[in-house]
Image 1 (tube, helix red, strand yellow):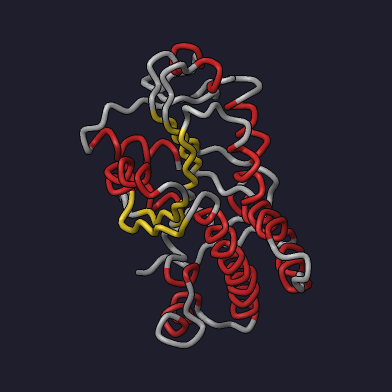
Image 2: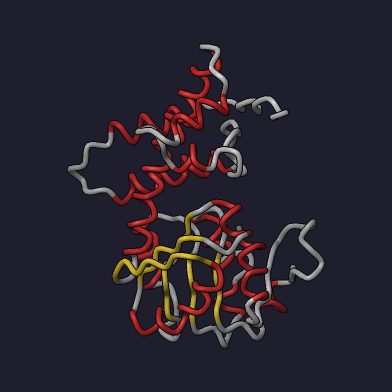
Length: 259
């Protein structure tokens, strides 16, 4: 997600630079954290989870210590809202914290039509809005710090539910002898339509099975984040069952080529 977001910023004329720890990162992506942080003023993080966020900010790469000019930290990863609330107290007061997780999968990032859910100080969000506009088609101001993340984890809980059921139903449809393309056409003009059915042939992970390190695996992490933020009195049985079902998903074979 991070690379196409970076390219969208660069295409819009922003002086943006990427950072990655992977050896196979593109040649124009910085891999030295000290060099990356030297002139950094606005940092958008697009990493997997809270552990990678901690590593990036405070532990392994230590960008917070290494970026003396940093004024804004924008968390675009999907994390627990409780983590975001605690993060504010771990940052120097000079750094404005904004939570701006995004939705739309890699295809939307590549096409600069992500949907951002944003929480934080209104004036600071105003200052950053040109960045969100360059990367996305929708910018939703959800409220104070943490509200964007709260909205995102609940949105992803719905996405996880539709993913789990859609994948199971498509498997059953195939076993019943239904043509996949015809069945999806039916669903997308009927009451079963959802985000996954509408983009089943474009969303890069739509046919994947669950694995710890892939996007289907990230869905279970996002369910964990939603569960962490629910009220103590919430009935979590359905959310926990959705998480269990997603962990059982196997790769879904591609449908036949259209003549």
